[in-house]
Length: 281
Image 1 (cartoon, rainbow, N blue to C red):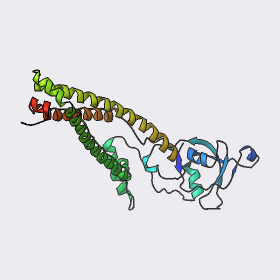
Image 2: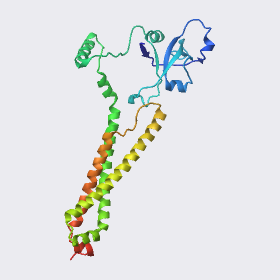
Image 3: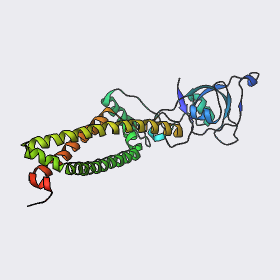
Image 4: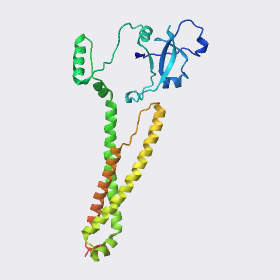
């Protein structure tokens, strides 16, 4: 079925299909999106009147299908409704004749796309062809800015968490300076103490990563549930991919090991008697 989108839709009357059976002529069929069906309380089989101008003559049509909107980020905040009509129907309704404002051409391979692009642009003055990916890039500039903003927030959060983790490890190790001094006096090497502290730091980082992944997963569910209901779209607003989870775990372990190593080195470099008495001779 060849379909077209009509930009202006005014519903002037909605009646049951059974109440209009005795009218002469067979109305055309249309498909509407589920947002319009919900807001206008429409169902399959209902009759609607479509007009280009308010209080215009228009045409009667029967709702034959209700389709779900695609997950298009460019249309999330737009409150427009979508209606699909047969091409000849929308031409007659809009009185636009055999003219179009824009159309899409499918091609096979980059060579065919380049050839079609050049031929269309040379066809006549005023024609301008663009690749679909170029249009997608231009319409997605806002989302690129948001993505960079989120990346900057992530970097700041990682740096802040690394400093916080280092402070915790310094405090924890400093509280155990007497234990470390006793181990040193017993003949335990500094390398063994450093490794034990780093293992403890890695365990803390692993536990923190597990808790963080769980909180993030729950947060994505809540965010998607809320904003899908607000904008009535199947678009995914928050996503926790295996790559993101793996990166967070690796960063957490690396930062935990670094924090444990720095905290342990601070203690093992001090003489055992200084750690035990807390006084420098």
